[in-house]
Amino acid sequence: NAGVTQTPKFRVLKTGQSMTLLCAQDMNHEYMYWYRQDPGMGLRLIHYSVGEGTTAKGEVPDGYNVSRLKKQNFLLGLESAAPSQTSVYFCASSQTYGYTFGSGTRLTVV
Amino acid sequence: AQSVTQLGSHVSVSEGALVLLRCNYSSSVPPYLFWYVQYPNQGLQLLLKYTTGATLVKGINGFEAEFKKSETSFHLTKPSAHMSDAAEYFCAVTYILTGGGNKLTFGTGTQLKVEL
Image (cartoon, rainbow over all chains, first blue to last red; front, side, top):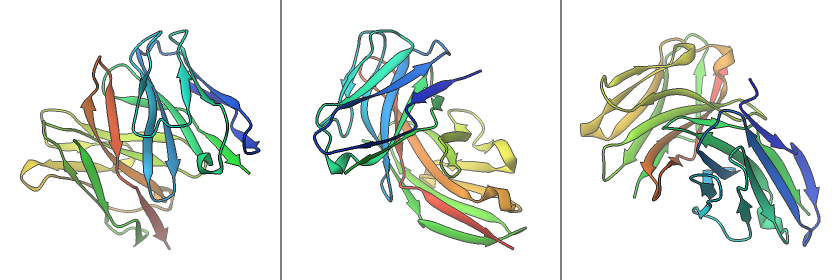
């Protein structure tokens, strides 16, 4: 009954460091998404995947890369973190029109 | 392109009073509309959704929303607010992505405060 699991939950990075956020879903959903949430801006789509081995850019893809080597996992990478990437990151999955969200990763870049 | 406007970034009501959170959308195709709730330090939870059929949609925790095509609105209501309703609420509209899947476009959110 896990749904969508995100790791880590919190992370502090220094400018220029890299990291990978992991999203895992156990519902056999075809579609997966990465959003970022910033105050007053709602949630904005970074990248998404319509199936294993596929990825595509969303609204705000710059500075991020993704991979979906296995259907259940969707990784979000930051190659060289910048303070502008300080945000809360949410992963979601869906099969039809209902999204299931993870509990988020709070990332601070100093 | 689809977009969502939520009127009022902060709404305050008394416990027991009517809750009304406003959402207007623009969409070039028939929309699928959603309301999500986010409690502090948590992810988003689906409250209710409109896809097709009945325009008055009932959700969890006593919330409901009515799809009004003529007004391009999907306002969220609850007859009697409870302290536990204090949270941030997001309206969203979806459209189909190239290759499948669907993209939710979110409004900027409304923070609901419930006072004694």
